[in-house]
Length: 488
Image: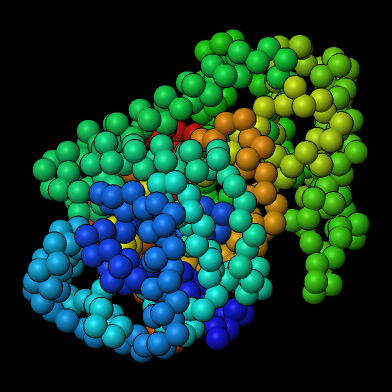
């Protein structure tokens, strides 16, 4: 049994489950190759590359999975040459894996389980009997693999239907496919063919179009007075908010930006976490009543003295009173912005909720997707080192706590949003690579973060690089690599 107090336990289980499903599918339906995509409802979405998988087929695959688990086959790792791996995968018709290996210079690992061989990016469990806890949920035209999660203390999460989340992932996958960047090797081909500048322009235009559509939707809702923005760490919320402000000015809408951070109660009034320390991420750490009263008064055209935290005096102070007109919406951004508990007294029809996150849909090969979280983690490592004097190890130390806060306070409210903004730029791994590699290489082999750093470095090796000077100054990516035209 895996130790779920270990941070990478969930990742190891997930990697092993992908291997198990691929193996069972190969044994049951050898003509079907499985493509795994990113997390939905804390599970892994999979589907056939060329063939849909129906419910009867899924039952047969599950039956074979259970047989493999019961057999308790050992899973062994062997390092092989690139040429051997190419020949082996080529003999099976796995062109996606052969093409991916074009960009690996050193040897690669292949995992063997009974008579089945496959490469999975990441570490695996020692044998198949470790994988007895899982569920398969049919999601036409594919399925969802559910498995124990560290965030759920080793339990399988309850399935939550998330149509908005699934829709934005599907659109992101279609975008990547049309742009020919759904596989790393395809992106590399574009870069090698001198297509990097055009790729950047297309991706940036994609953000422009999303912002235009969003501004149109807000303009069409004449009764909107509160625009709430939330998203997980390193989604690009700061630049997004500033660019949204610009987009709204096209419709002569000049929003008032209010920081939720100014509504924190004194630390001694904050609720305590399980360790008896002030939990500043808890929604009850905010002065909810004052926030609601301020917003309602502003909407009513009353003069309001907004709070701000005076760091010199170490206490709350207030700005001079001011009034806004009926055409001025209020923009808030923060971890609790989408939570109705925060804006409980504001009428629903006056609120417009925006969720922002990068939904990267790029794979190493069909069996190995790049984790959505890894893009945000790389963004944060690069940004923290450049602008916050925070080392990669310190960022990795904080990351589990950051993730816990996201699962508790942000993700439950995604489906209540009015608009989901995909802040991913399909070319950004090729930019972040040159910054992230230098940062991650500072982590010593003796560090408890070495495995995590090494895992990130390994998948970055697949990417060709793009000259960072090609990234426009208004780009959301500049929030992390520097050189933005916006003040952060």
